[in-house]
Length: 66
Image (cartoon, rainbow, N blue to C red; front, side, top):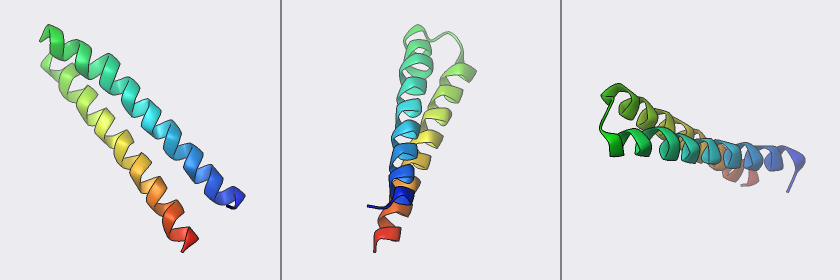
């Protein structure tokens, strides 16, 4: 595995971790309280965006291998 591929893998891991933090701290906490709808939606959207970024980085790494 080249250094370039390792960087994409690490960035993918970081994006996935950020997504989990947004999901756990913003989406879940506000969803349980049902207090602010905009915070619930923003936490879900941010989580999804970072998970999509993580998947696209893994895909880019996979495509560069083949």
